[in-house]
Image (tube, rainbow, N blue to C red; front, side, top):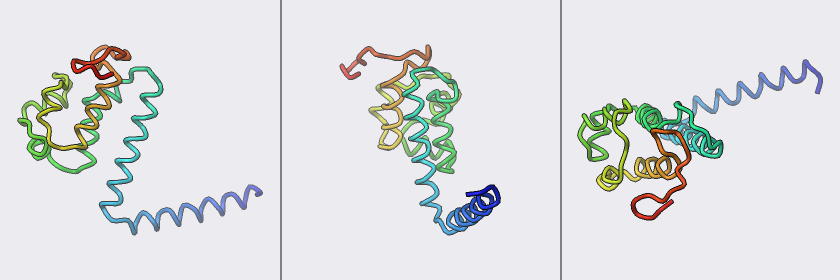
Length: 136
């Protein structure tokens, strides 16, 4: 394709993508955003380097924002006090096994397990040591 043909093709593709986006339900949009978040986290884990943007606190904030619910509602949904959620979101408390055990929301439990499994959150180094229950 020549330069002008590429521009026309790019404009047509953009138009089609915008039309498709407008026709998507909120549920489809949320699913796409969650898949995007998952893929970004997967790519990040493969880097084996700590980046503050991918800390547990930031990922939790992003997740709650995607759900478009209040912190209070999210805390109720996962079975913790809103103050504890605030401490987790503001990186004043690390998630621990008790939090994982008391959480009743399978998605957030998976998010917590995935992050805790790979990284020691405070130091930002790979955590190759098994956790308290012998899992790596």
